Length: 330
Image: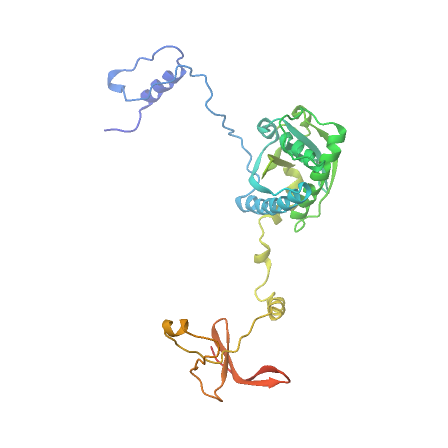
């Protein structure tokens, strides 16, 4: 059977898709089994962005993900400390997309911060779900953090309290990028209306990171969007691994110095004995257990379970000591 459609068959199928509310006639010799079309052919199943930006290479995007994953770990500790509540923060996604797409995907209601990240020329946006932020405000003020009703907007006083959490969060995000760039943040504006967040042209490419925070009484998300043009100056550094840049053997002296300062516990093994379980259970105070060594035989010091030093047990003052007589080859 010929599985390749002819030009006439293709034209007929296209005509079927174009036809609305009427059945297309198909010649018997051209008929093929097909699935029925939905009645509403204008319905959009999902939106596909054929112009989805792809400015970052895979290794650069992965490098950026590592910085945000590092930030998420620090955010977990910071949020837990500020709210006195065990909270976990995870970096769920890092994406490159157009600014209008990011705005359309922005869940509501949210509190939006316009943040200046120097030396970046363009501002960034930091958002937090109002349920998370309002619960944090309640927690900072001494409440339980359980919020049943969230206001549509925040007062100036509530934003001031919220800054006690958002400020340290921005500190952690800046610290996560310290390896490639020193960032200094300042908050330029705060609002809850997403229509006021149009700080960039709709088609500008942005990098969006999505953090999800969850605790005993708090759950919500924090999102950061940075214009792509702001990252262009450090884009070449994003895909580089610090371990790869180190020349072979360059860290040997530092490693040796660090390892030599690691304390180890040493135990002198005087000998061994094998006892039946019955005899072991019958041992009483004063009983003598013979060992498999004789007087004058060297004692052994094992390291990590392997014999390393041989020597003799002696005395220094009123303390027992061990004199090394030989270093055993492993």
